[in-house]
Image 1 (cartoon, rainbow, N blue to C red):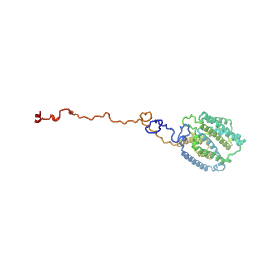
Image 2 (image 1 turned 45 degrees about the vertical axis):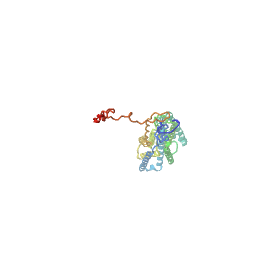
Image 3 (image 1 turned 135 degrees about the vertical axis):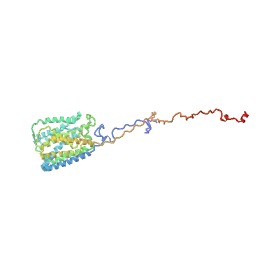
Image 4 (image 1 turned 90 degrees about the vertical axis):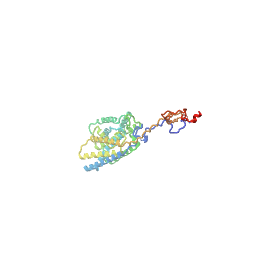
Length: 413
């Protein structure tokens, strides 16, 4: 019955300790979007989104009051319908930017795509809404697919690849030198309510769906956690490609909607729309690093931007989209820092390492430890101290023989 047969777990037994896992106790399923377990363990905290979206709601209410005080006609009748359509157009662009940001591969081509889609809709609108929009949607989806494949196959930064895609779209836009009148007779203001409900449903339900832990980790899987040049797996590639397709189609719909309201489309690079959309998405609470985002932020931010532009128009101000987009971008970067600081999982309690076991003596063949003997006193034992005087001779003359002799003793002798 040696050590290989008996499996007792006794304190005196010396053997190799079992290896401990480097993953914290929260489990692998709680590790953030990282197949190699290099991410942050735990669940995101959503308290920061509740606070920030509450502030956005208060700002939205304040802008409603200001617009009502300055121009009440902008909030009723035809003015309200025009405002709603403008909000939906800005909101679709913000959704496109926010979706690509959540996948950690921002799409900077959404502005030029919107302008190109507006030009196409203006030129082909007389062929019917379905034909014009359907053709533009197919082209936009194909372009988003190619852009996504470029990013995931080469594994290059999304902003760089999409900037190259934006350059290609701008070349198409520059083929026109004069504004193009919209040939279609469709007026989206007649269905402003339906458009707003559809946009709000996409924004809110998309935010709720993205708040689910597994979905959020899947959508943000492309976000780097170590070396950004390392590939993030097939799932991340599929999500990023789908994000580019959806964001490009959303940008196309926004461009067609804005063109149908304006009645004419002026050829421009459209990068100001990109800046406005990305700034709005960041200001709404979407992290610039990807993965994290809120629920109602895009809806409230799009409404606030529309109200601010209506207020500026009522006041007679001339404000460039570059100025609005730049201000939103700077403020959005601050929001990103807040989201990353207070939205990430709470730090887990540090587990102290187990102290090493004391060294043991050599073992016999069966694995049993030979007990170390306790120390004993000095050996041989120390003799007691002897007196310093001269010792008496045990063989010497006895005392009674050395005393004075008596007469009887003399006679005997």
